Length: 332
Ligand SMILES: Nc1nc2c(ncn2[C@@H]2O[C@H](COP(=O)(O)OP(=O)(O)O)[C@@H](O)[C@H]2O)c(=O)[nH]1
Ligand SMILES: [Mg+2]
Image (cartoon, rainbow, N blue to C red; front, side):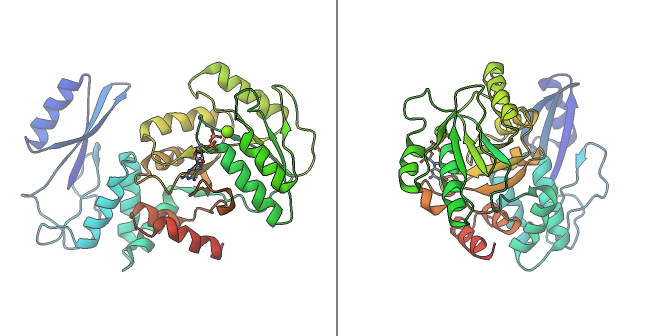
C-alpha cells in the first residue's frame, strides 16, 4: 500500500492531482482543510512497484509529501502479521499520522507477538500518567455531557476509600435535575456526602478532593469560562473525560479546547461499548496522557490503569481486550 497526500487550492484540483499521480484505482482516505486550501490523502496498491522482502515500513523513494507507509514482501502480498496490524490500526479511524507512527514503530520491533510490537508503537505515540493513589491535589473532571464524569468521580471515590485515602467529593452539577443523584446515592453508601458547589465557590478542604462538573459544550465560550473559574478557584488539575466511540476529528478539536484550560490528562470511558477507539486515540495524540479507563457503568468495577499493552490489545481488537484490562489491573 502506498499512501500520499496532495495539497491544492480546491478539492477538485486535489482530486485531479490524485488521479494524475496515482491513477483511477486510488482510494481517497481522507481530506482536511489546510492554510493552502485542502489536503487529500489517497492510497494505491503498488502492483507494479518493486517490493521489499520483509515486514518493514520503509522510507525509500518517497517525496516530501508522501507518507512512508509502504509494506510488502516478494509475493506482492503483505505478510500476514503486517496485514493484520495495518488493518487493525486503520479500523479505529484515528488520524493518519497516528496510524503511521504506530505501525512504523511496531514494524521496527517486529516481535512474534503483535501485541508487543504494537505496544512499542503505542508507547512511542501516547503518554500514560495513571491516577495512582489520591494526592492532596484537587482534580476537576471536565468534558461534554454524558461523557461519564460522574461515574468516574464515583469510581475514583470508591477506590480512594479502598486505598485508605478517602477523597472529599464535590459537584458543580447542581442545577440540572438528577445531575448529582448518582453521587448522592454513593454518598449514602460511603457515608461521604458530596459538597454542592455553586459557581465561583471554592471547596474548602486540604486533603485529596475531586470535583465533578456539569457537562459543557466545548465550543461555547461561556461554558468554558465557567469551567475555568471552577478550576482556578480550586487550584485544581482539570482532567478530561471522553467516552470511546466518538469521532476522531471532533475529539481532536475537543482535546485542543480542553488543553487550553490546562488539561493534560484524559480518562477514556465506555471502552466496553465501543468497537472503534480512534476518537480517544486522536484526543490523546494531541499530547494528553491517559490517566485511566472506564469499561463498565457499574461503580464497583472501578477504573483501569490504561497501559501500553492494554491499549495495544484494544487496538488489535482482541475480543478479550476489554476483559484483559482486568489482567493489567491485577498487575498494576
Ligand atoms: N457501558 C458503560 N457505561 C458508562 C461508562 N461510564 C459511564 N457510563 C454510563 O454513561 C452514562 C453517562 O454517565 P455519567 O457519569 O452520568 O456522565 P456525565 O454526564 O459525564 O456525568 C450513564 O448512563 C453511565 O452509567 C462505562 O465505562 N461503560
Ligand atoms: Mg454528571
